[in-house]
Length: 349
Image (cartoon, helix red, strand yellow):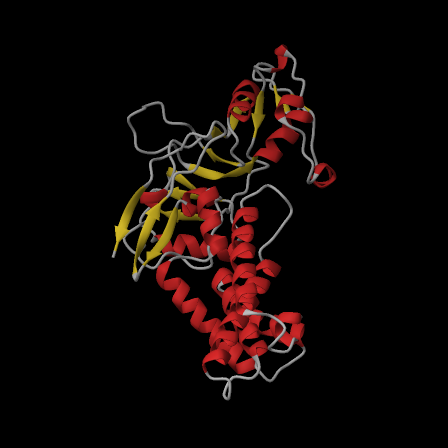
């Protein structure tokens, strides 16, 4: 408040320069610490300090023209925070409400737009860069501009963990215990030839939560006597949502491992699928608009050839540096800190 409203003789330029330097370095240092802190208020204060510093220096050079350095402090705060967050309209409203002054609405908007374009010329915003450094699989608003060469066949993950329509309890427990996938395609029959380029005729999709509930309720079929055990209803799925048990918490007797589970009554018969020739942009927009977690990739015969997840899409990020840009494929880390894939640039300008 003092930086915006105090008279011009309140702060000397030496004090403002010292305050700006120390506070800027402290903001940079504390941002990387694992403490509950942010950059919103430090950016406002740092920007107000250097804005008032510019106003004081201009007053020293032309005292008859510059009489209120508080205006420069306001514009400096807006420019600094806009360069960090790359926000424009929303930040203009926030600053106008905080200062209770709509007189400088247009100058603040021009300042924020300028800060955004200048910052985007060199790199992404600070929060976007931090997401890339942490390798968080978070999708941006739009697909990378230079991703027109990519298709679903280029980004799909293989091999795909699939289940037969009639699957043994042993196989279900083994795959659920050794994988972290949330969705599993169900096929009419898994191919016996390992050299084929598909994983079977696609019937539908079943989630991990549904499989765990079937194992918990012991919905089995005896392959010898053809007897059916257990039953599950829609109320059972609603009662356990969203806290489904883990497969390791389920006690399954050894005598039940040879039993069969009929997955056909519980699969989603019409999940979202795409052909492997579909463009990356179309797959990206489908995930963004429908909130998908996984997408089955099929060939022209409706046979599974891969799966696309959010992490597969988030691997491809646009990069920008000094007017040039492209699409970069990131390598996400596993639990041991090892990358799943090597980092490389697949499309450049």
